[in-house]
Structure formats: structure tokens, C-alpha cells
Length: 248
Image (tube, rainbow, N blue to C red):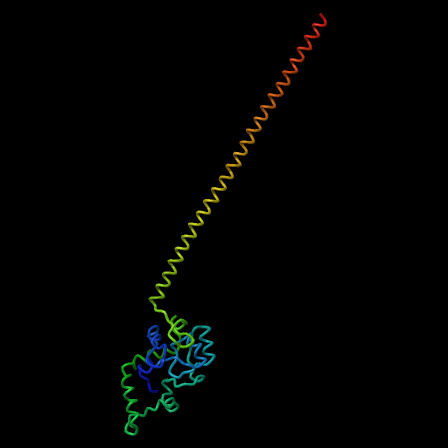
């Protein structure tokens, strides 16, 4: 399979720069996004798993949506996916992969340009072998970041530094809110305690007032009774005096 240059992907594949930035280990020069309807959903979940012209099937998309892992199935997908066993077959099936062997260089002038493209990418071949295995499936949490690519395939990502700052701001706001809530709670508890103590003091004072009133009432009653007794005694003395006077 003929590998396309980096400049071609940068010119006609939106979102490629974001892919290289957020997943540089699995995103090489010839990984790109697929533009089929089924690939739109999978591109949001696993944007780094697409080779050039590769279309994911629905089962692979469902698998990726459920457990976060998307494996390429060459039998159920159509495209020019390049593996070790089917290099010659893919070269024959696609028009843009017409690369002849070294023995046929004199037959076609276009093959000279293809050889130049391959020479430009020879420096990356060693890295491609290691990255291809990682590119076949979702790895780590970067592949599940839906904020990288929107439904139109445009770059909608936020930098790692911005996410860190945003999370720090959120934590600080939560701490401030928690401290304010705790202070408000302490104030409410203090007010409730003051109200309860005041009510208890009022009840004690009412009891004391009642006792004082009762004591006063008792004293008044006793005093009135004594006065009545005194009056009776005086009346009795007067009556006795009158009786004695009559008898005399």
C-alpha cells in the first residue's frame, strides 16, 4: 500500500492535528478519520483507529461504545487497510495504490514519484510497525475523549493545560462553597441553640413568677384569715361585755 505524505493529510483531513497532539503514540502519518455514516459515531469514541479509506462495521462500533475497545475486522470492513499478509491484494484493488516492484521502474513514469514518496517515509517505518498494533484498538483514556472531534469532524478539543486549570478551578470553587455552607450551618446551629436556651430561661422565669404569685396569694389569704379571726374575737369580747353589763 502506498503511504501518503504528511502534507496531504494536513491539507485535506480536518482534525489530524488534534489527533497527533492528543494521541501521538498511535497516530502516525497515514492514520486518518473515516467519513462514512457509521464511522461518524466510532470516530467520536475511537478517533485514532482509522486507516485511510477504512470503514467500520456496526458491530465494531457497538463493541467500542460498550466496552471502550474497537478492533479492526478486515473481513467485515471494506477499505485499503494494509496488513502484512495482504499487501499485494490491496495494491491491486485500489487505483491510487499502483506501486510497481523495483524491476518495473522503467515501464511507468508515475512509479518514480511513488518511489520518492516511499523514500520520504522510510525514516518512519520502524515506528510504524510498533504503532500499527496500538492503532488497532483503543488504548488509555484518550481514545474515549468525545470532546476531541465533533460530529462534523472538526477540531473541538481543549488543551490538556486548559483541562487541568478547569479542574483546579472546579475544585477550588467546591472547597469555597463547602466552607461557606459549613459557616452557614454553624451560624444556624448557634441561633437554634440561643433560641432553645432563651425558651428554657423563660420557662424557668415563668415558674418562678408563678411561685412568687402563689406565695403572695397565700400570704394575703393568711393575712385576711387572721383579720377575720381578730374581728371575731373582738366581737366575742364585746358580746361578753354586754352580757356582763346586763347581769350586773
